Image 1 (cartoon, rainbow, N blue to C red):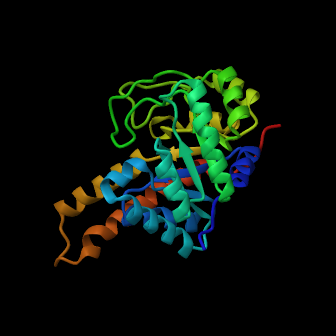
Image 2 (cartoon, rainbow, N blue to C red):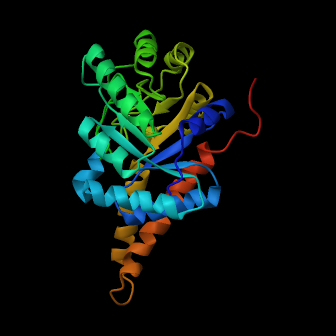
Length: 286
């Protein structure tokens, strides 16, 4: 049975000022690399086999692949549905065995977002899964890596109402972060993050952690962020690995010779993120 990373894992991470990292995966090699990193570091991770990746690999094949990887490892690996906007897709993934889902209703009016998110929470909790919600949309395309600038920001008062009326277990915040690598450097609005953290009683989620300086990410973790999403570094590791192998091809045509380095590159990229953010700091500030 798949060992879910439950909502308690996020709450523990928040209390210990570290983060659970959700890694978006699109194929087997990325999944194996992330699981190996989790085994190496012995910290919880989430395999995010999400809506956008389904367009590439298909929902059921990719979902079952991620669930199988999580079930076969001794590491605490959960499977999370990232950025779902279709409630039927959420129900299908819950039926398959996902331990957590994100409903992204950020394009809706607040009242509509609350109503639909509340229904998702009821369906997920009935299956023992937890839910991540979102208010202000986070700019950028999660499947691309460049060209995004910060968009609308999360309002603390709206966040408080949203969490109270939906019962979500985690809240994705927009505080200047963008998906992918931003077109120009962005600075997180840490003051806004602190106000949001004071207004809600659930762990916070930072999407677009790929293009941010480590000190800013650590500051965000200290203010209540307990989950980070990482995608771009894994895709870039895959691309760089394939280009390097193509430049110096292995003898013969064994698949392992071409795709084994992708696993290694993914593992290295994931390990670096886990070492930076997934372990409790040596000294926790009062």
